Length: 311
Image (tube, rainbow, N blue to C red; front, side):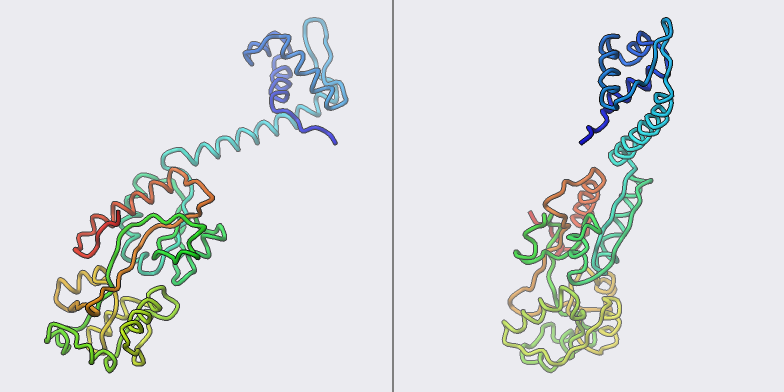
């Protein structure tokens, strides 16, 4: 089996071919003339052919040397390009960022984060993959994205991941101001089963949480509407077609304007934890670490009472 070419030998050969002198090549490489001579002999031995001849005090390439020089220069250019490419990943403002996020995170969390990130990394190529349920985690495990903004996965599912907590929220009923529950100021337990609930669709991570919560409360959910858009849910709730179940921070504008009213699901809270996930087996690049920090800063200063950082 033939040995792999040594980059130090290639550098020495290229310098010698360029300068035509062992003395000058050694000076360029900050080596002794003897070291350069031994390096070239070792290269010729590895290749099994003579690459140069001495003509007086000068060195000239043989035909084999001329041919090998073309390959050497190409290899060294590729090596330099590879090094420059790797260095660009750690240079401020360069690199690539691939993020997966739920539709809710894309709409309510990412815009502020990406605005700050773009200012720090103006030349970074950014790709966002939007999806619900387990899609961001599947993309993460498959190496198709670098980070995922998701709800905390259950222990068996998240064992191969690092989950960096961002904030914790609470799912609540949101109703129109003229809804009987809004007028009453509370939700009668016996009225929940007969009320039309407007929920995230079954593909979301939120739907099974809601179903499990009411199952534990011994409340049957048989009258509900599924929608894949929080904005659509809010619009249906506003016109009185039912009671929505989602986090108040998603409806901040509507709550402040009075077009929606927030009420607890019951005596027991239904809380979720959001965070940024990445594979445990890989180390984050500088840009990725910056993105996670910006997510933490953006959610910590969201300005909602229920949106609190998780220590």
